[in-house]
Amino acid sequence: MSYYGNRGNGGGSSRSGGYGSSSSKPEPVVYTDGACTNNGYSNARGGIGIYWGPDHPNNVSAPLNDSRATNNRAEYTAVNEAIKQARNDGYGSVTIRTDSELLVKSANEYSKNWQRNDWKTASGSDVKNQDLIKEFHGLKQSINVRLEHVNGHRGEHGNEMADRLAKEAAKKYY
Image 1 (cartoon, rainbow, N blue to C red):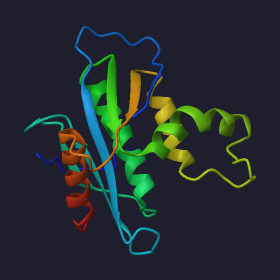
Image 2 (image 1 turned 45 degrees about the vertical axis):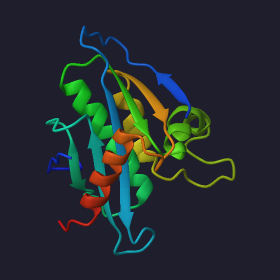
Image 3 (image 1 turned 60 degrees about the vertical axis):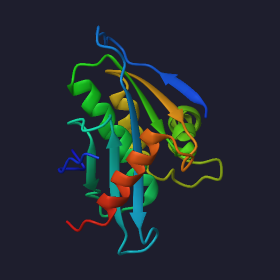
């Protein structure tokens, strides 16, 4: 299921595995971001931003088509959609840079324990956004994914562009 329809122009690292994927294409570096207005409220509106480069056809600024819109769901959705784009474009690997430290840690560290604990946190509650985390793990079976955390709002061009695309999308009504 795709969470977007409109395309726009506009720290630490971890590598996780794809199996059976190979490509002679150079590994792209893609920036992603998620935004949400009224985060935590029933009228929340989310948006995703995916930035491949100036005027790249894969750049995305799209509303989050999710009845449970939050900033974290937007962040996860943007990453998953960028992975799908890279895979569908024939890349064997992709580096994704995001300013969501929670996303990087949950996708690559915390989720190992969550899987062992039947998707429960250490306190016994259900893991939030597990559907999107599981989707991430499924996607990385077909493409090598390197998630890198970047500090947000520090002038890194790609991150600033993804942020702008996500914020613009969160303001769109669908």
